[in-house]
Length: 327
Image 1 (tube, helix red, strand yellow):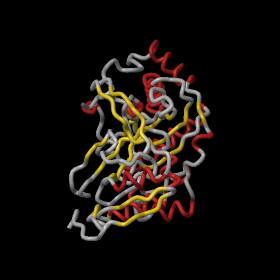
Image 2 (spheres, rainbow, N blue to C red):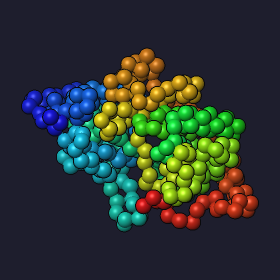
Image 3 (cartoon, rainbow, N blue to C red):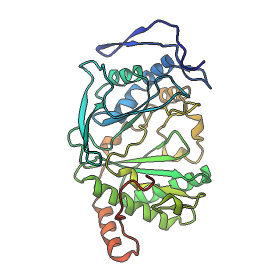
Image 4 (cartoon, rainbow, N blue to C red):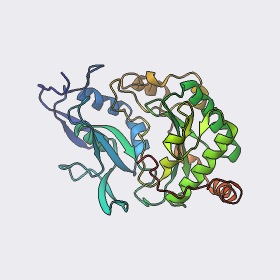
């Protein structure tokens, strides 16, 4: 039964730290029989990749204290009882008038400690601790609506790649761990969240212009055709987070948000990337996002697109409504 555990705790050496893994035999994913220790061993096997995806970023944790199908805890603050070597960074939430000290991964031991604390998913900010108000990552979220087929996501990814090439940006794609795709672009941390979101919307509208039968940028969910793909520029709004590259997802099949190359998108099935299969892939291919920090894009061309849209488009280039359209 999910959640039951009889095995004693074990001690794991991770880097310079010893981490006690309690209830290692607790079944977290009953459908595939994967335990808490299986999850720990997965993250150890993709250590370089998950640390590269999380390093120095405030990180929200999705914790499942009893595994699936138990309840999920969205943890912004570092869980109680953390050893003093686990790093944090303080972030503010003006919408709620609060602050929180969030996990800010520096090394693999920080990730494994979070897994010991029942974390399955890692959701980092697109900014870093040095300046949490200035993102260094532009995120393109290809989010299929309920009736959108996977081959439509694949077609739109090709359009996204074409536009990125034209503007001189290097995109780093990954599966979402669900039915969509994410593409990340490193940017210089010169702009605030509002400008990064504004640039992301300008890009999304250009993709929509080129693929109007496949794409929507409609703000409200009720206005979106359920068969289309939504290019979700709003993922660049402040305090919006997405599952990191190499993050396992809290779903019964333990799928993983997995880096892919552009040339393989047309043939991959994202359901095949799981806690069991991704370690083999990483052992063979390495971290496909390893070079992401070496390709930094200047957002100015997209901000110019946005400024022109303000003068010529009948729609605002940045809707004057809160950045939470589906609340």
